[in-house]
Figure 1: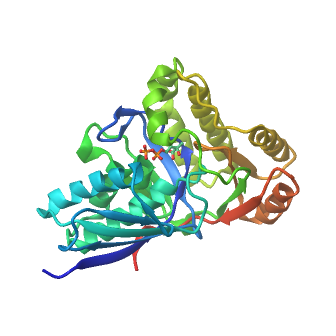
Figure 2: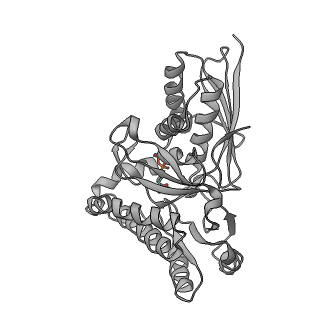
Figure 3: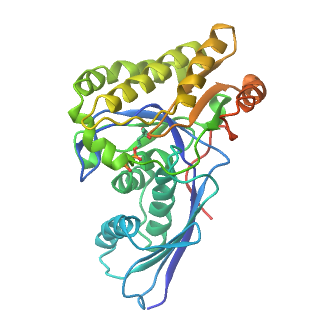
Length: 324
Ligand code: DP6
């Protein structure tokens, strides 16, 4: 049998309404729905080759051969695809990011979205976008949102079949920009997968989840109506709620650095003085500053003035995962 190979590219995404905690950790069925924007310019490029000559899966990540947990996680995920294709052939996977890995810029989202698309193509599975999104979810929850393009909503769903993401508006719908202030390029101490398992230990998680439909509605409306003030209010609230849950878990998780809080307060102050910008932080200390395109130059310059900020990545809304 010959080799089956394909290469795909996917963007990471920034969640405006966050995914934190699962109803089912194994299936990655989230406790609440979420909404995100894909990040143009940043991507993972992943090549997958199913090769009958291999005796196990291999993973080359940013030029480094992975052996431990990262390889195990990917292998378990490829088992799902092998199940669908009714094959037991192992794969050689090579993936590269053009942005810092594990620093709160969802690298696993881009990686698993690209891997899902490339592997499904290599195995000729003929999956629809919704089926690919559902599959990517099993690799990393947020990866399901990097399959469709632009502004994306992940329906929590009641079971595996109904938990996937769809585009709610294309990238060109709204000229929003995410200026990512990198305050710490090193990988974080506690990964998201471990963090999700702790969410239910916080007494605040149930309140956060109960109020999620209201925030989802407010965010969806703000995006569809291009209402920046409404988006800013719900985005900052949602980020703060998730971090409140993280900080009150057992054990507590503190992803912010002092510099993160410093920037958050500055950004809220800029907005009060008329600059259309707001913040959102994922499971890491870097600060995503969402702003209108006309403010992006000024936001970037202001962020670069802080000695704590090493680099500012500027991303417009990105398209869907695609084959190369
Ligand atoms: C804080 O999707 O990285 O970025 O499913 O375990 O891979 P796993 O978790 P992951 O969690 C993302 C958490 C977040 C919020 C979000 O992107 O919605």
